[in-house]
Image 1 (cartoon, rainbow, N blue to C red):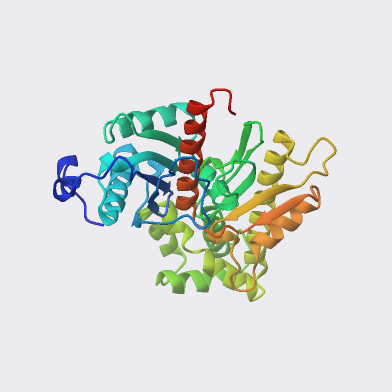
Image 2: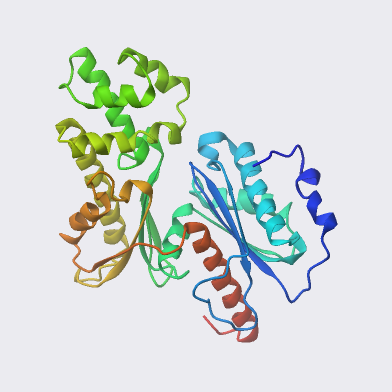
Length: 357
Protein backbone atom coordinates (compact mmCIF):
# COMPACT_ATOMS: atom_id res chain seq x y z
CA UNK A 1 0.00 0.00 0.00
CA UNK A 2 1.38 3.42 -0.97
CA UNK A 3 2.44 5.72 1.84
CA UNK A 4 1.04 9.26 1.87
CA UNK A 5 3.00 12.21 3.20
CA UNK A 6 0.07 13.88 4.99
CA UNK A 7 -3.63 13.53 5.80
CA UNK A 8 -4.71 15.94 3.07
CA UNK A 9 -3.02 13.81 0.42
CA UNK A 10 -4.33 10.57 1.93
CA UNK A 11 -7.97 11.69 1.76
CA UNK A 12 -7.62 13.66 -1.47
CA UNK A 13 -9.72 11.11 -3.35
CA UNK A 14 -12.82 12.46 -1.57
CA UNK A 15 -12.73 15.61 -3.70
CA UNK A 16 -13.69 13.52 -6.72
CA UNK A 17 -16.66 11.86 -5.04
CA UNK A 18 -20.23 13.05 -5.04
CA UNK A 19 -21.59 13.30 -1.52
CA UNK A 20 -23.35 10.15 -0.43
CA UNK A 21 -26.95 10.44 0.70
CA UNK A 22 -27.65 10.40 4.43
CA UNK A 23 -29.61 7.21 3.73
CA UNK A 24 -26.60 5.31 2.39
CA UNK A 25 -24.36 5.09 5.42
CA UNK A 26 -21.51 2.60 5.69
CA UNK A 27 -19.56 0.98 8.53
CA UNK A 28 -15.84 0.35 8.88
CA UNK A 29 -14.53 -2.70 10.72
CA UNK A 30 -10.78 -2.89 11.28
CA UNK A 31 -8.69 -5.73 12.66
CA UNK A 32 -5.16 -4.59 13.47
CA UNK A 33 -2.50 -7.09 14.42
CA UNK A 34 1.22 -7.56 14.59
CA UNK A 35 1.37 -9.23 11.17
CA UNK A 36 -1.25 -7.31 9.19
CA UNK A 37 -4.12 -4.83 9.35
CA UNK A 38 -7.42 -5.45 7.52
CA UNK A 39 -10.29 -2.99 7.09
CA UNK A 40 -13.67 -3.84 5.58
CA UNK A 41 -16.41 -1.45 4.52
CA UNK A 42 -20.00 -2.68 4.84
CA UNK A 43 -23.47 -1.15 4.55
CA UNK A 44 -24.89 0.25 7.80
CA UNK A 45 -28.19 -1.11 9.16
CA UNK A 46 -31.34 0.56 7.93
CA UNK A 47 -34.17 1.03 10.41
CA UNK A 48 -34.32 -2.05 12.69
CA UNK A 49 -32.66 -4.41 10.21
CA UNK A 50 -31.04 -7.41 11.87
CA UNK A 51 -27.53 -8.50 11.00
CA UNK A 52 -27.62 -10.19 7.57
CA UNK A 53 -25.88 -13.50 6.92
CA UNK A 54 -23.55 -13.07 5.21
CA UNK A 55 -22.75 -9.44 5.92
CA UNK A 56 -22.21 -7.72 2.54
CA UNK A 57 -18.65 -6.47 2.03
CA UNK A 58 -18.36 -3.37 -0.14
CA UNK A 59 -14.56 -3.18 0.03
CA UNK A 60 -11.56 -4.72 1.78
CA UNK A 61 -8.12 -3.18 2.26
CA UNK A 62 -4.98 -4.75 3.74
CA UNK A 63 -1.91 -3.16 5.33
CA UNK A 64 0.99 -4.06 7.61
CA UNK A 65 1.50 -4.13 11.37
CA UNK A 66 -0.56 -1.74 13.52
CA UNK A 67 0.44 -2.89 17.01
CA UNK A 68 1.83 0.23 18.67
CA UNK A 69 3.86 -1.87 21.11
CA UNK A 70 5.70 -3.36 18.14
CA UNK A 71 6.21 -0.42 15.75
CA UNK A 72 5.35 2.68 17.79
CA UNK A 73 2.16 4.71 18.02
CA UNK A 74 2.84 7.04 15.08
CA UNK A 75 3.53 4.23 12.61
CA UNK A 76 0.59 2.18 13.91
CA UNK A 77 -1.83 5.07 13.45
CA UNK A 78 -0.53 5.77 9.98
CA UNK A 79 -1.09 2.14 8.99
CA UNK A 80 -4.66 2.14 10.29
CA UNK A 81 -5.56 5.43 8.63
CA UNK A 82 -4.11 4.21 5.33
CA UNK A 83 -6.24 1.06 5.28
CA UNK A 84 -9.41 2.92 6.34
CA UNK A 85 -8.92 5.48 3.58
CA UNK A 86 -8.19 2.73 1.06
CA UNK A 87 -11.34 0.78 2.01
CA UNK A 88 -13.53 3.87 1.63
CA UNK A 89 -11.86 4.78 -1.65
CA UNK A 90 -12.49 1.28 -3.02
CA UNK A 91 -16.13 1.50 -1.91
CA UNK A 92 -16.52 4.90 -3.55
CA UNK A 93 -17.42 6.54 -0.25
CA UNK A 94 -16.18 9.56 1.66
CA UNK A 95 -15.96 9.98 5.42
CA UNK A 96 -19.34 11.75 5.29
CA UNK A 97 -20.95 8.39 4.48
CA UNK A 98 -19.53 6.66 7.56
CA UNK A 99 -22.01 5.87 10.33
CA UNK A 100 -19.68 4.00 12.68
CA UNK A 101 -16.11 2.76 12.96
CA UNK A 102 -15.05 -0.24 15.05
CA UNK A 103 -11.31 -0.70 15.52
CA UNK A 104 -10.03 -3.90 17.13
CA UNK A 105 -6.29 -3.60 17.54
CA UNK A 106 -3.63 -5.67 19.28
CA UNK A 107 -1.85 -3.64 21.93
CA UNK A 108 -5.05 -1.92 23.07
CA UNK A 109 -5.04 -3.29 26.58
CA UNK A 110 -6.41 -0.58 28.84
CA UNK A 111 -9.10 2.11 28.93
CA UNK A 112 -6.34 4.69 28.48
CA UNK A 113 -5.35 3.00 25.20
CA UNK A 114 -8.97 3.13 24.02
CA UNK A 115 -9.31 6.81 24.89
CA UNK A 116 -6.13 7.74 23.01
CA UNK A 117 -7.27 5.92 19.88
CA UNK A 118 -10.77 7.45 20.02
CA UNK A 119 -9.30 10.94 20.40
CA UNK A 120 -7.17 10.28 17.34
CA UNK A 121 -10.16 8.97 15.36
CA UNK A 122 -12.07 12.14 16.26
CA UNK A 123 -9.46 14.07 14.26
CA UNK A 124 -10.29 11.98 11.18
CA UNK A 125 -14.07 11.46 11.16
CA UNK A 126 -17.05 13.82 11.53
CA UNK A 127 -18.45 14.32 15.03
CA UNK A 128 -21.61 12.30 14.30
CA UNK A 129 -19.67 9.09 13.54
CA UNK A 130 -19.92 6.49 16.31
CA UNK A 131 -16.49 5.22 17.36
CA UNK A 132 -15.68 1.94 19.10
CA UNK A 133 -12.22 0.66 20.05
CA UNK A 134 -11.31 -2.79 21.40
CA UNK A 135 -8.45 -5.22 21.64
CA UNK A 136 -8.22 -7.35 18.49
CA UNK A 137 -9.37 -10.39 20.47
CA UNK A 138 -12.83 -8.85 20.79
CA UNK A 139 -13.32 -8.76 17.01
CA UNK A 140 -12.00 -12.30 16.75
CA UNK A 141 -14.63 -13.44 19.25
CA UNK A 142 -17.34 -11.54 17.38
CA UNK A 143 -16.30 -13.21 14.11
CA UNK A 144 -17.43 -16.55 15.54
CA UNK A 145 -20.52 -15.39 17.45
CA UNK A 146 -22.23 -13.14 14.86
CA UNK A 147 -21.14 -9.99 16.62
CA UNK A 148 -22.36 -11.06 20.06
CA UNK A 149 -19.92 -10.77 22.97
CA UNK A 150 -20.33 -13.97 24.93
CA UNK A 151 -17.91 -16.83 25.44
CA UNK A 152 -14.15 -17.07 25.01
CA UNK A 153 -11.80 -16.52 22.11
CA UNK A 154 -8.29 -17.89 21.75
CA UNK A 155 -5.97 -16.14 19.32
CA UNK A 156 -2.68 -17.85 18.54
CA UNK A 157 -0.88 -16.19 15.67
CA UNK A 158 2.25 -14.08 15.95
CA UNK A 159 1.07 -13.31 19.48
CA UNK A 160 -1.47 -15.06 21.69
CA UNK A 161 -4.31 -14.08 24.00
CA UNK A 162 -7.44 -15.56 25.55
CA UNK A 163 -10.34 -13.16 26.06
CA UNK A 164 -13.81 -13.76 27.38
CA UNK A 165 -17.16 -12.05 27.98
CA UNK A 166 -20.20 -12.97 30.02
CA UNK A 167 -23.73 -12.17 28.88
CA UNK A 168 -23.97 -9.43 31.52
CA UNK A 169 -20.86 -7.68 30.17
CA UNK A 170 -18.08 -8.82 32.49
CA UNK A 171 -14.80 -9.54 30.74
CA UNK A 172 -11.44 -11.13 31.45
CA UNK A 173 -8.24 -11.91 29.60
CA UNK A 174 -5.16 -14.07 29.99
CA UNK A 175 -1.77 -13.81 28.29
CA UNK A 176 -1.48 -11.29 25.47
CA UNK A 177 1.31 -9.44 27.29
CA UNK A 178 3.81 -9.66 24.43
CA UNK A 179 6.96 -11.73 23.95
CA UNK A 180 8.97 -10.17 26.77
CA UNK A 181 6.35 -11.20 29.34
CA UNK A 182 5.91 -14.66 27.92
CA UNK A 183 3.23 -15.35 25.28
CA UNK A 184 4.79 -18.79 25.00
CA UNK A 185 1.87 -20.33 23.16
CA UNK A 186 2.20 -17.79 20.34
CA UNK A 187 4.00 -18.12 17.04
CA UNK A 188 6.72 -15.87 18.40
CA UNK A 189 6.98 -17.98 21.54
CA UNK A 190 7.23 -21.24 19.58
CA UNK A 191 9.84 -19.82 17.21
CA UNK A 192 11.82 -18.24 20.04
CA UNK A 193 12.03 -21.54 21.91
CA UNK A 194 13.05 -23.35 18.72
CA UNK A 195 15.84 -20.85 18.04
CA UNK A 196 16.96 -21.19 21.66
CA UNK A 197 17.04 -24.98 21.26
CA UNK A 198 19.34 -24.58 18.24
CA UNK A 199 21.77 -22.43 20.24
CA UNK A 200 21.66 -24.81 23.21
CA UNK A 201 22.36 -27.82 21.00
CA UNK A 202 25.26 -25.96 19.39
CA UNK A 203 27.01 -24.99 22.62
CA UNK A 204 26.35 -28.26 24.46
CA UNK A 205 23.60 -27.18 26.85
CA UNK A 206 20.87 -29.10 25.06
CA UNK A 207 20.27 -32.23 23.00
CA UNK A 208 20.96 -32.43 19.28
CA UNK A 209 17.92 -31.57 17.19
CA UNK A 210 16.91 -31.57 13.54
CA UNK A 211 15.72 -28.02 14.15
CA UNK A 212 19.32 -26.94 13.62
CA UNK A 213 19.65 -28.04 9.99
CA UNK A 214 16.02 -27.22 9.16
CA UNK A 215 16.17 -23.68 10.50
CA UNK A 216 19.60 -23.00 8.98
CA UNK A 217 18.28 -24.13 5.60
CA UNK A 218 15.11 -22.07 5.95
CA UNK A 219 17.03 -18.92 6.90
CA UNK A 220 19.81 -19.60 4.37
CA UNK A 221 22.48 -19.58 7.07
CA UNK A 222 25.62 -21.72 7.32
CA UNK A 223 26.23 -22.18 11.05
CA UNK A 224 24.27 -21.91 14.33
CA UNK A 225 26.46 -18.95 15.32
CA UNK A 226 24.84 -16.99 12.49
CA UNK A 227 21.41 -17.53 14.07
CA UNK A 228 22.32 -15.01 16.78
CA UNK A 229 23.13 -12.28 14.28
CA UNK A 230 20.03 -13.07 12.21
CA UNK A 231 17.77 -12.88 15.26
CA UNK A 232 18.97 -9.49 16.50
CA UNK A 233 19.40 -7.91 13.08
CA UNK A 234 15.63 -7.47 12.97
CA UNK A 235 13.82 -8.89 16.02
CA UNK A 236 10.34 -7.97 14.74
CA UNK A 237 7.77 -10.37 16.12
CA UNK A 238 6.26 -11.49 12.81
CA UNK A 239 9.70 -12.19 11.28
CA UNK A 240 10.60 -14.51 14.16
CA UNK A 241 7.18 -16.19 14.20
CA UNK A 242 7.51 -17.13 10.52
CA UNK A 243 9.69 -20.07 11.61
CA UNK A 244 6.72 -21.95 13.13
CA UNK A 245 6.04 -24.16 10.05
CA UNK A 246 9.65 -25.38 10.25
CA UNK A 247 9.12 -26.37 13.88
CA UNK A 248 5.93 -28.24 13.03
CA UNK A 249 7.66 -30.07 10.18
CA UNK A 250 10.47 -31.22 12.47
CA UNK A 251 7.97 -32.35 15.10
CA UNK A 252 6.01 -34.28 12.46
CA UNK A 253 9.24 -36.03 11.47
CA UNK A 254 9.71 -37.20 15.07
CA UNK A 255 12.14 -34.67 16.52
CA UNK A 256 11.58 -34.74 20.30
CA UNK A 257 12.89 -31.24 20.91
CA UNK A 258 10.47 -29.79 18.37
CA UNK A 259 7.64 -31.91 19.78
CA UNK A 260 8.29 -30.57 23.27
CA UNK A 261 8.24 -26.99 22.02
CA UNK A 262 4.78 -27.55 20.51
CA UNK A 263 3.47 -29.48 23.51
CA UNK A 264 4.57 -26.64 25.80
CA UNK A 265 2.73 -24.19 23.54
CA UNK A 266 -0.45 -26.31 23.67
CA UNK A 267 -0.31 -26.37 27.47
CA UNK A 268 0.22 -22.60 27.64
CA UNK A 269 -2.71 -21.90 25.30
CA UNK A 270 -5.01 -24.27 27.17
CA UNK A 271 -4.07 -22.70 30.52
CA UNK A 272 -4.89 -19.25 29.14
CA UNK A 273 -8.37 -20.39 28.09
CA UNK A 274 -9.00 -22.16 31.39
CA UNK A 275 -7.96 -19.08 33.37
CA UNK A 276 -10.54 -16.94 31.54
CA UNK A 277 -13.29 -19.57 31.86
CA UNK A 278 -12.67 -19.92 35.59
CA UNK A 279 -12.60 -16.19 36.31
CA UNK A 280 -15.83 -15.53 34.42
CA UNK A 281 -17.49 -18.82 35.37
CA UNK A 282 -18.43 -19.33 31.73
CA UNK A 283 -18.93 -22.98 32.61
CA UNK A 284 -21.53 -22.12 35.26
CA UNK A 285 -21.35 -22.61 39.00
CA UNK A 286 -21.29 -26.39 38.67
CA UNK A 287 -18.78 -26.36 35.79
CA UNK A 288 -21.16 -28.05 33.37
CA UNK A 289 -22.61 -25.17 31.32
CA UNK A 290 -21.70 -24.92 27.65
CA UNK A 291 -19.84 -21.94 26.20
CA UNK A 292 -18.36 -21.08 22.79
CA UNK A 293 -14.60 -21.10 22.30
CA UNK A 294 -13.70 -19.24 19.12
CA UNK A 295 -10.35 -20.37 17.70
CA UNK A 296 -8.36 -17.92 15.56
CA UNK A 297 -4.78 -17.81 14.29
CA UNK A 298 -2.29 -19.69 12.15
CA UNK A 299 -0.74 -21.57 15.07
CA UNK A 300 -4.08 -23.36 15.64
CA UNK A 301 -4.38 -24.53 12.04
CA UNK A 302 -3.47 -28.08 11.05
CA UNK A 303 0.04 -28.15 9.61
CA UNK A 304 2.34 -31.11 8.94
CA UNK A 305 0.00 -33.41 10.86
CA UNK A 306 -0.09 -31.17 13.95
CA UNK A 307 -3.59 -29.96 14.79
CA UNK A 308 -2.73 -27.73 17.74
CA UNK A 309 -6.23 -26.30 17.92
CA UNK A 310 -7.71 -29.76 18.44
CA UNK A 311 -5.13 -30.52 21.13
CA UNK A 312 -5.90 -27.26 22.96
CA UNK A 313 -9.63 -28.05 22.94
CA UNK A 314 -8.89 -31.53 24.25
CA UNK A 315 -6.91 -30.07 27.18
CA UNK A 316 -9.67 -27.57 27.98
CA UNK A 317 -12.46 -30.15 27.72
CA UNK A 318 -10.73 -32.37 30.28
CA UNK A 319 -11.74 -29.75 32.84
CA UNK A 320 -14.67 -27.98 31.15
CA UNK A 321 -16.74 -30.44 29.15
CA UNK A 322 -19.18 -27.78 27.96
CA UNK A 323 -16.63 -26.16 25.64
CA UNK A 324 -17.95 -25.71 22.08
CA UNK A 325 -15.07 -25.00 19.66
CA UNK A 326 -15.93 -22.64 16.81
CA UNK A 327 -13.95 -22.02 13.66
CA UNK A 328 -15.15 -18.62 12.38
CA UNK A 329 -16.50 -18.44 8.83
CA UNK A 330 -15.43 -14.80 8.51
CA UNK A 331 -12.23 -12.95 9.34
CA UNK A 332 -11.90 -10.75 12.47
CA UNK A 333 -12.24 -7.52 10.45
CA UNK A 334 -15.75 -8.66 9.54
CA UNK A 335 -16.26 -9.44 13.22
CA UNK A 336 -15.39 -5.80 13.96
CA UNK A 337 -17.95 -4.68 11.36
CA UNK A 338 -20.54 -6.98 12.96
CA UNK A 339 -19.85 -5.32 16.31
CA UNK A 340 -20.32 -1.89 14.72
CA UNK A 341 -23.62 -3.07 13.19
CA UNK A 342 -24.94 -4.37 16.52
CA UNK A 343 -23.78 -1.26 18.38
CA UNK A 344 -25.57 0.98 15.86
CA UNK A 345 -28.74 -1.09 16.05
CA UNK A 346 -28.69 -1.05 19.86
CA UNK A 347 -28.16 2.73 19.96
CA UNK A 348 -31.07 3.22 17.54
CA UNK A 349 -33.39 1.05 19.62
CA UNK A 350 -32.39 2.86 22.81
CA UNK A 351 -33.27 6.19 21.22
CA UNK A 352 -36.72 4.87 20.29
CA UNK A 353 -37.24 2.85 23.49
CA UNK A 354 -35.12 4.38 26.29
CA UNK A 355 -35.68 1.39 28.58
CA UNK A 356 -34.45 -1.10 25.94
CA UNK A 357 -31.35 -3.06 27.00
